[in-house]
Amino acid sequence: MESALQVKNLTVHYGGFTALDGVDLNIERHATLGLVGESGSGKSTLARVVAGLIAPDEGQILLESELLTKKRSREQHKKIQMIFQNPDASLNPKHSIRQILSEALLFHRIVDRKQVERRCREWLDRVHIPGNALDRYPHEFSGGQRQRIAIARALSVEPRILIADEPTSALDVSVQRSVLDLFNTLKEELQLTMLFISHDLGVIHEISDTVAVMKQGRLVEVQAKAPFFARPETAYSRELLSAVPRMPKLSTTPGGNHESRT
Amino acid sequence: MMSIQPLLEVEGLSLAAKPGGKILVDTISFTLNKGETLGLVGESGSGKSLTLRAVLGLLPRGVEKVGGAIQSGASSAMVFQDPRGALDPLCPVVKQLTEVVYYRQKLSRKASRAAALELLDRLGLPDSLKHTDRYPSQLSGGQCQRVVIAMALACKPGILLCDEPTTALDVTVQRQIIETISALQKELGFAMVFVTHNLAIAAAMCSKLCVMKEGRIVEQGEARALLQNPQDPYTQMLMNSVLPVPELEGSV
Image (cartoon, rainbow over all chains, first blue to last red; front, side, top):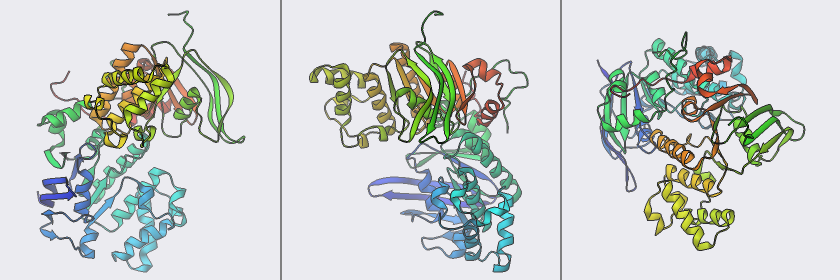
């Protein structure tokens, strides 16, 4: 498989603290890499470096064999889009949904002015937000809906890679479920390449094709999903997996609510 | 066991926003016996935390009790969700804990400090705190939460109220904290009300469960039985939202 993104020997220092320590990573085209780790392990730093928000001290980032440098062109920025944990902070509260969506479309010249409205409606429809939302403001929506709007904005500019940094951590469990279902549908429909960051192994299991584990700025393990969850190679991954609280086995459940979904 | 008066009895409790505003918690009732753990589960806005605060008598400004009664046969203490927010950032932790012991257990200053250090030791905090006191900002989130639990235990509560004590923590730390709380409960025999949105944790910790939705208890009962055979569609929906993590190979 071709790789969509290659990261080589990436190192980032914050003052004396090493946030990323020689990270090598490969994301295949049309695949989702789930990045897990505890807080402070450097997951978000890695995402920000790839998105170009932080300049690395060392190392290279290759997007489909194109080298990304500190100074990126508009086109290069367009190719990597990011969704943040907190949709309240990433959507401008003084802009209507129309402004929020059309700004991205016009800035990256995806469509011309005449077609903006139609494209906005298409995207809202895709993320299951009613079309009359266009003239409303972010505060009028629930957390889950805001996150859907953020997803629509990120995907509307047709990025090569979508980075999602804990996109469901601030949401309730049932809303989290529906947002993850949306991610999975979009992944199929649009053949997305994703870097999906979460500290929740349940979420990672739901969405990823490959799992990468980070600890103190280093990548400790990269494996395909199924073997990772059954037989993690490193002791640290095993420790992480065994610490996840699980539902107790409920022996006699006729019709079972706990059939494992894949 | 049958004739024992319940430790905590909440009878038709209703809470509303002042003045005469929206009903936030609507006529809920539950009882808690000695040594039991009651789990309140539900999504945000379901009134779990408010119920807990009502039990403690620490309702946030603008919320008032409009009906019902809370009868409690023991003192209660609370562990909050955000340990950094629950500690005074300008006061070193041993000093903070000593103060709680001093006022609540009415010991001398010196004995208070000894009792505080013993509590910290019991919660598995590093020995170095004995010589050099530290500020909350110098401790990790898990360590801060242990200090908060120590402070709650310093009140010698009959009921420990836990408001999502592990939500802000990493999974490995979360497990340590849960193990610590369970061990302490066995040792000291306090009853617990445990608020969480994580059904897996609730299932592991609690003997009884109340499922809350929009201020009402939609279903309550024995934890195992309830999870085995959920009656209310909301409970079923919550259970279906739990993302499964496959078992490790070679584990039990």
